[in-house]
Amino acid sequence: MHDKDMLLETRKLSLNIGDKNVLCEVSAHFFENQITAIIGPNGSGKSTLLSFLTRKRVVGETNGTDGEVLFCGNPLSDMSSQSFARLAAVLPQFHHTILDFYVEDIVLMGRFPFKEKFQDYTAEDREKVRIAMEKAGVSHLALRKAGGLSGGELQRVMIARTLAQDTDLLFLDEPTNHLDVKHKLALMHLLRGCDKTVVAVLHDLSLVAQYTDYVVAMKGGKVYAKGKTEEVLKPEILEEIFEVPFLRFEQDGKIYLNY
Amino acid sequence: MRKSVFGIAAILLVLLCITLLLSLGAGSVMIPSDVVWQQVITGFTGENVQVSRILFDIRLPRSLFAAMAGASLGLTGLLMQTISQNDLADPYILGVSSGAGAGAVICIVTGLSTMLLGYGVYIGAFVGAALATASVLLLSGRNDNPLRLVLMGIGVSAIFSALTMFAIYAAKDEAQVRSAMFWLLGSLTGIQWKVVPVMMISLTVLILFCWLYRHELDIMLLGSEEARSLGMSYQRLQRMSVIMASVSAAVVTSIAGVIGFVGLIVPHMARRIGRPDHASMLWVTVLLGALVMVVADALARSLFRPEELPIGILTSFLGAPVFLWIIWRQYAR
Image 1: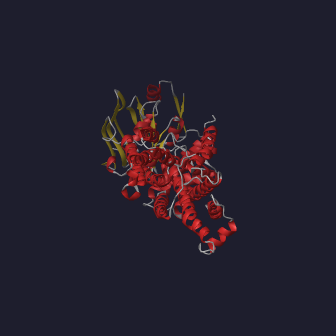
Image 2: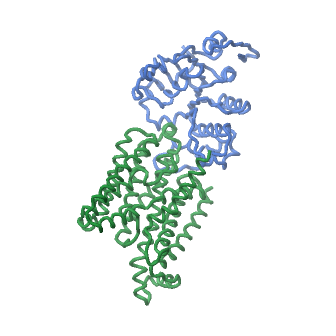
Image 3: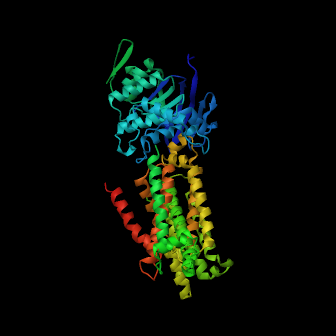
C-alpha cells in the first residue's frame, strides 16, 4: 500500500480507434498533493490518458472505450463538467488563442467555472487573476494582446489562466513547451511549492527526475512502469522505453540523467 | 479598465443622434436641418403640416427602423462570428436570408402575400428563415465543429436560392416578378410605424441575450474543448445563439428584405475601435450598426433623388470592397 491518499485511478482503461490500440488496459494511480509525471515516447498514449483523466474523453461516451476512471472512488463520468472544472484545471497541449483578446481578459476566463449563471466577475476574481499572473510571471503582459506574444509568453499566460482557477488539482499537458530554461525551472519550482495534486505530461526527463514524486511510464499504449520517481527513472527501464542509452548519477540526493 | 469603451460608446451615441436628425432631412423632398430641428423640438407640430407629415409619418419611423435594424444586423453578425469562430461569417451565412428570401418570393408569386391580413410576405419570410435555420441545425446534428455549421449554411442557402430563382422564373405576372426582385434587393421604402415595435422588441431581446451571455460568448471563442474544460455547456449555448441570431435576422429580413454586409462589416469595425470582449463589443456593435444603417439609408434615398436606391444595393456596393479588403489583409500570408 502507498502512504498517500489516492485521488484518481484508472482501471484497465482501453481505447481502440479502428483496429489501433491507443490505450491498452491502463491501470494507474494518482495521489493527493503529489506531482505525477506521465512520460513516454511520442504516440505512446500520454495525452490520451490525460484526456480521460480530464473528462475530455469519457468511458462509455467515447466510442471504443473500456475500463474505469475513478475520482475519489466514484466514476468520473458521474461528475458534471462544471463541478469538475471547479476541482480541476487543465492546461491543454494545443490551445486556441483568441489573438485580439487582452492577456488579463484571457486569464480572467479561468474564473469562469466558479460563476453562477449570469453572474459577473467580482473583485475577488480579479484579485485571484492578479496573483495567478504574478506567479506565472506575466503581470507585465496584462494589457498586451495575445496575438503579439511569443510562444513562451503565451504558454505562461495559459499557465496563469490555469492557476487562476485556483483548484487543488492541476492537469498539465507538456507545460514546459516553448519555455526557456529559466521559466521551465520557475514553473516546476512553483508546482513543487504549491501543495496541489499535479498530473503532468512531461518530456524533459531531468525535470521529471528533480521535481516529481511519481512517474507513469507509457509505451505503445500500455503502462510500462509506474511508481516513485527514483524507482522508475532507472537507465534499464528508460532504455527500454525510449530506445536510447541512458546514464544516471546521483548527487546530494538528486537524480541526474544523461542520454 | 473599460473607460475607453465608454468613451467610444458616448462618441458613437452622439454621432448617432446627429445622423438621425440629419437623415430626417434627406429624401426626395430635401428639408433643411433647421426646419427639421424646429419640427423635432415642437414634437412635429410645426406650422407646415405637410412637412410635419413627411417627417413624422414617413421619415421618422423609417430612420428609427433603420437604426434598430442596423444594430440588430450588426449584433447578429457578431453572434454568428462567435458561433462559427470565423470572422467572415454574417447573419446570412446560416441560410437565414435565403430562407427568408425564398419564403417571401413564393408568397409574392403565388399571391399569398395579399392574403393573411396583408402580412403574407412577412409571414412567408419568417417561415422560410425558420425552415432554413431548422435544416441547418438538423443537418449539422450533434457536431460542434464550426466549419461544419458554416458549410451546412452554404449548402442550405444554395437550395433556398434555387427555390427563389424557380419561383421568379415560374411567375406569370410581370408585376409580381418586379415586386419579388425589389424585395430581394432590400429596401426600407414604405416602412411604417406599425413595424417599429416589432423591431424594437426583437432588438431588445437580442441585446439582452448577448448581455446575459457575454462571458459565455467570450469562452466560446476558446473552442468547444477548452470551453468544456472550463465547465461550459458549449453545444447548448451554440444552439441558443443560432436560434437567437436566426430569429433576429428573420425579423429584419422579413420587413426590409435582404440587406447584406452590414452584419459582416460592423463587428469588424467594432473590433478595431473597441475591446474584443463581448461586454464591450455588444455596445459598440449596436451603436455602430445603427449609425452605419442610418447613413446608408439617408444616402440611398438622396443619392439619385427623386429616385430611391434599394439599400441592399448600396450596402453591397460599400460592403463588398471592405469584405475583399479584409480577406486581402487577413489571408496575406
